[in-house]
Image (cartoon, rainbow, N blue to C red):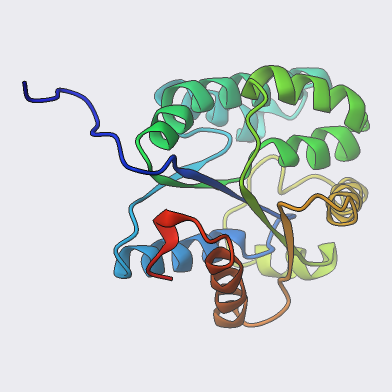
Length: 221
């Protein structure tokens, strides 16, 4: 009988997440890695947070809309987690089961930095909501692109900004503090990249870390 769904691959997939403050170049890094993985014959699925599903994209529009400037911190966290829960169940888990490399632009760590530190809700509270939304799913590898807020703001002048981009300097300083705390957490999955370097150098370092995972899906790296 011909299968009607995704054909199972010999290896469970990989979840690789990309984190960093605004303007840190993480999206540029994902662009480069997606192209490089494709060139080398590795099947990948690219997603983003908030968003990544039809429901999540509608939530994203509310979260980033300048008209949502009066949104309270608790609402922001719950909307982020709602989008994340949908993404995990609709996209990430099926892709991992089918043996794909999932590249996700932000994941649960973003809520730790933005809502836990930036909004002052606390990392312990956010951790509980993250675990509920993700069902306990953890990335296999997280690339954390660190760039001081002032440098990130300078880069943002070259793009259209959204509600979170336009928060005051104190907010973005707290977000950066949150990412620094994650960088210092000692979690084996966390790879800290100096995002002040040229994009190609950051990409080459990231590829080196991917190759060291020694996962069957990365045999061409």
